[in-house]
Image 1: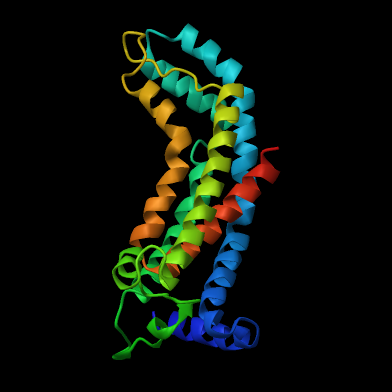
Image 2: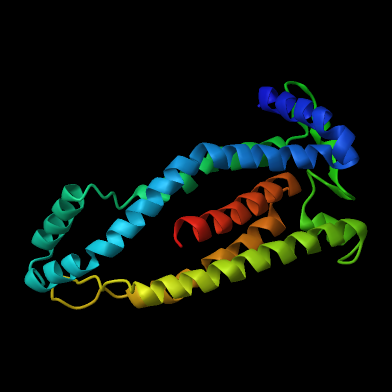
Length: 239
């Protein structure tokens, strides 16, 4: 973790002439963009997989009718169809999973008072008036909602809400155009809870607001930058 801390410090030093006291925050945004560039090929593959799965929906619906009384045979048939078309149902999860180590690294880095046996110098860095190691509740305690640090969080919340609303609208449109096929239980009935999952899915983006509120500001910056990148990326790849 000390190696990564040194990397952030050096990157902040390079950006200091442009961003001054917020150079470390800019370094985190740049680091996030670098991570997203690394996983972009997987995001493109996930987009191709999603389009392929959409194309296969009529065939899967036909398999469900044919094997509605034999769920094990249905599962094998769907798996065989995916293998034949070289479509992985898990491809869409990989970009998000591969970003988790970077998020947790930032979380632990800006939650630790010491690094390598010495004080954590990164905790002295700020985004405008908000400490990168602080949380929203800390900002509320020191200056309230409209304090200097509180206004920084207000700006982040507005950005995250705008991105979540954009994702919500796109998810609703995509689900309307490509409705989720019902998952049948052994008796041919729809598995309980699928309808609820379908209704909740468009609102998942708004959970990001909670994450921004409870994690250190440095990790929140990673989430905000990555979420915004995802919204733009999906708009381009899924158009």
